[in-house]
Image 1 (spheres, rainbow, N blue to C red):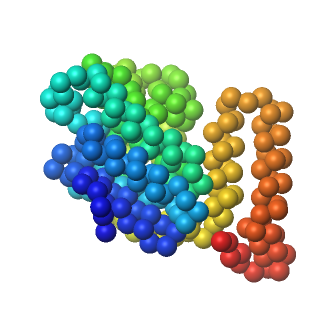
Image 2 (cartoon, rainbow, N blue to C red):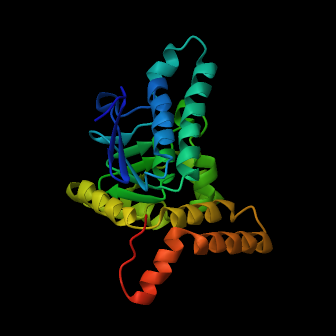
Length: 259
């Protein structure tokens, strides 16, 4: 089911599946897609959703911004700023929500598509997938959180190489660099992503959200600040229904049934 023009949005219990759905345009991000992605992310930011699975339709995950639409805009700068703002709103929501974001990269991820792919908490890539920044090739600069996530994932030196030379990485290279969680045969990507989503749906959303919050602050905090956050989060989790269920289940040697 979907009520979007450029995405499909399917909710099945605690799992939401979002598919970028402009296959004839390589799933390029136009103004409609980024507005819809921001709205879809907002809809996922609820206690009812524990996992978001994001992928693309057709041969591409996402080829980045829709340059034709950019070129046709009366004010290119204002148009691109609006597109970037909506994309950033979506990525910020994905980053802050408790739900785990799984990106299943089914083909080329270029420009903002690359940025979106590696913003996943868990990143699966088909063997045929490839990753390239591609911004400076057309005289633009990175967006979509690339300048935030890439230095943290692979360091500044490798980030500069990707952004300045537009080097393309294969799925295996991206995995070796630490950008991809797992590389999967093309024919198995959908099933592997679905299985991982089901596995994560059985975990504690509050615990997962705490992990995401702790890791998002680790590079800006000193050790004492970070340990204080750890203490506060673990105390909060210990008093939560999931925390009590998890401990009780462990002691009783049974599987935990999280909310």
